[in-house]
Image: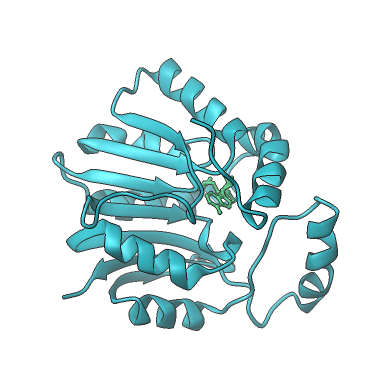
Length: 215
Ligand SMILES: C[S@@+](CC[C@H](N)C(=O)[O-])C[C@H]1O[C@@H](n2cnc3c(N)ncnc32)[C@H](O)[C@@H]1O
C-alpha cells in the first residue's frame, strides 16, 4: 500500500531515499559505542517481547536484536532504506523482523502493543519530537521501554543552525532539530517516562537513553 506523505515528511523521504545506498556502505562512526548500546539494549530483551523500531534505516540494529525476541516490526519513511534492510534480512535468514514503510507521524497501532520501542538516530530528525514521544508512550505496554540514541545539537554548531534551512531547501540536508540532552530528558519525563539508563559516549554529541513508561 502506498504511504501518504504530508508536505512536511515528503522532503525527508526524498532525502533519505537519495542517500540510502551510501548510508548503507558507511561504517558505524564509533563501533565500540555502538556495540555497547546493543549490549545495554540486550540486557532488557526477553524471548516473548514484541518490538517496534521507528526509523530503522537499513535494518542493522533490528537484525542484531532479532534472535533475542519474538518479533520486531521495523519501520522507516524511506523505501530505499527498507529495500536494503529486506535484502539483508533475507541474506541472513532472519524471519521474525518485518519491514514497513511508515513515517513516525503516520504510523499507528493499538494502544499498548509493544514491549519496547527503538528510535536510534531519529528524534532529532523529526518535526515534533514531543508528539513522537507521546505516540511511543501510547504504543507501549505498561512498564514498556523506549530506547533512543539522539544527537543533541542544542547550544552547539551555531553555524549549522544557520545553514540548515538552506541545506534542506536544496535537498542536501535532512530536517534537523536543535535541542540539548537536558531538553530531551525533560521531554521524555514530560511524556510520562522515567529515565532508566542515560549514557553519553566519550566525545559524542549523542545521548543513549533507556526510558521506562511510568505508571
Ligand atoms: C540517521 S538514520 C538512522 C537509521 C537507523 N536507525 C540507524 O541507527 O542506523 C535516520 C533514519 O530515519 C528515517 N526517518 C527520517 N525521518 C523519518 C520520519 N519522519 N519517520 C520515519 N523515519 C524517518 C530515515 O529514512 C533514516 O533511515
